[in-house]
Image 1 (cartoon, chains in turn blue, yellow):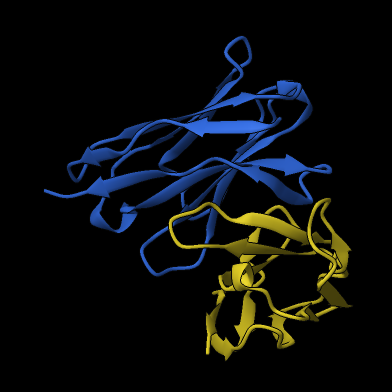
Image 2 (cartoon, rainbow over the protein chains, first blue to last red; image 1 turned 120 degrees about the horizontal axis):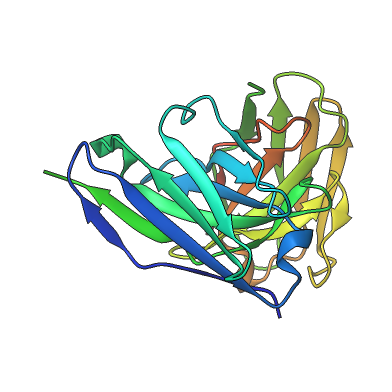
Length: 119
Length: 107
């Protein structure tokens, strides 16, 4: 069965960077792209960016363009998301989500990783 | 960016009721509209794509309709496990955006 397992919770200071992982199993990794979506407390889901797991091409939301890097390791069937210059507003649950049907929807989601940014 | 607006923001209903949640896009998105269900402390669950097509395994009491800018999610004969927050999401372009959510609570 398809599984997306994310790395554990992180606590960071303002200005620091965080790198999250999303390990996949149960399907052919390079056949589906991977997205990152975050949810701040009490807020709506917010799409951050995605990676073509086949060729490594990426596209990012303008909101995060300057601070986000999404990479993948095909041998480990794992996708990574690094967010830099963290501020308190980045405190949120971060999800990886598989893009289904040429990224028309997000059909499988990781369990989420809580990132807390606090001095 | 395409703005997605859901109504109502919250809704109270009883087991067995039928409820409807609306989602409006700030511009026409054809049928590029998806619905997700999220329970507290859990990741969103994918329910419906292309406005009206149920994902495999989703109970038939869930249905979606609409095109262009106005969409609805209907849940008939509410079950206890249906009380959750529902989000619409547009995939018309790759600057994906979500509605603010509709929290469905037990009356």
